[in-house]
Amino acid sequence: MNVDALRAQLLAWYDASARDLPWRVRPQARTDGQRADPYRVWLSEVMLQQTTVPHATPYFLRFTARWPTVGALAAEGDGEVMAAWAGLGYYARARNLLACARAVANEHGGVFPATEEDLRALPGLGPYTAAAVAAIAFDAPTNVVDGNVERVMARLFAVESPLPDAKPELKRLAASLVRHERPGDWAQALMDLGATICRPKAPLCNRCPVAAHCAALATGAPQTYPRKAAKAVRPHRFGVAYVLTWGDAVALVRRPPKGLLGGMLALPTSDWRATRWSDSEATAAAPAAADWRRVGEVEHGFTHFTLTLQLLRAEGDAADVIWSPRHDLEALPSVFLKAARAGLADRL
Image (tube, rainbow, N blue to C red):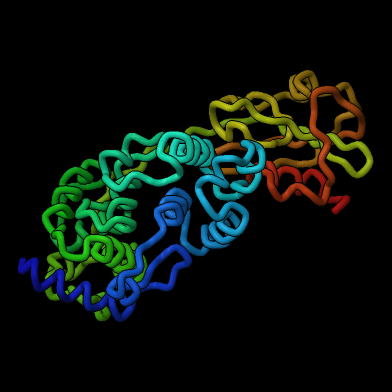
């Protein structure tokens, strides 16, 4: 493979076709000396983990309007940030977001460190995020490898090892293409190529600027790369969600700070276990003594398991709950928003 030719072709394509993203400084602006704001780069990268650009963009715009600097975010209360994050999923990211913002504000004078090594020392910044911020915000020649880049490498080099075992090899291959020339643009060019051309399904090989270098295309079946190991079957769990109303208000609780959906507002629930809850068990685990009745159930998928939530509904008072207006539930995590909507369907 002619690496110099590949890099020149991909960067030329990026110069002409770079996506317009609210956190991005476009190639011409970078050439003219404009640099990306490390805070905006970092925030976008954290939001984009496990989330698509269309879904993350409105959250990014709301966050940066409300908290335009890392210092402003660091000074905000946990509950406000967690509520603003609701709907983005993987809520440990929001807790790490606050921990990192406060470390930058309190230990670095509100200025992000410029090296990959120093960025890695911040709480919640893993290898990928540290490399991405270093490259995009500070033009450091780091090796930025996300899912899009893994797919591009697997196809360029026709890597036969299946994911996830192939990850170290794909990272090594990506590193072999990194140079000191335009490292921030290079990282973003690879991301854009994977997102818009070298797509998981139906790659647009006829529009690919580096198709001449692609070993997977030469096989005639580029869409079969990267190879993937068979997925393990996710376990299934059962729980009960309680929709307790008092007039126009709905009872919520704050989940423990550690664990799944930690620190988030939620409907009261039973434990989640491998067997379905009987009516008597479900009633015994309720947050208050009331005339509970079944109103259906909802299904939800998490990364490592799937969940069936039986829904019980009642009217009454309870201690140790947070009363929220029925029309103000949008900040709930998606599993609880789904449950609340189903449980309140006759009143919405």
